[in-house]
Length: 132
Image (cartoon, rainbow, N blue to C red; front, top):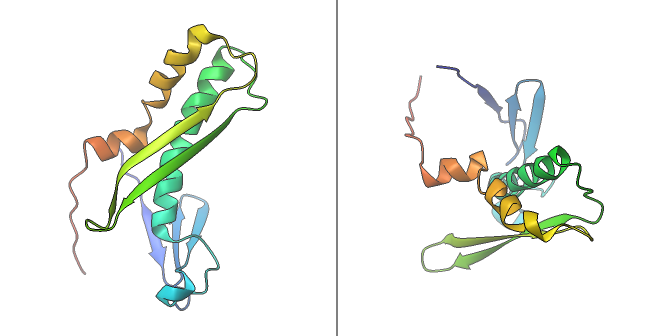
């Protein structure tokens, strides 16, 4: 089984950095939560991973068919449930480029539905948390 490794460090204050391969992702907390707001919060990165994952599937769909993506954009709106302290609904909207062929509309949505981040949410992994 292929493994991925994320190494986390704690540089200062509420900052947390994650090293994945050759990349370092910086996070921080909002001032209201004791941070400096110098970087996105971890949960903001989680939300961004969903939207960007759907985006890469839409982009790849268009590129593989030589469809122009000029003017294409994507947004994701998340509805917050104050009682449950979670987002029960996330709505992704792909604004199609001008001249996008209608015959591909459903297919590009199906393509975005293949997002691996979403798939992990739909069939969540087992979490094993230990100390050493």
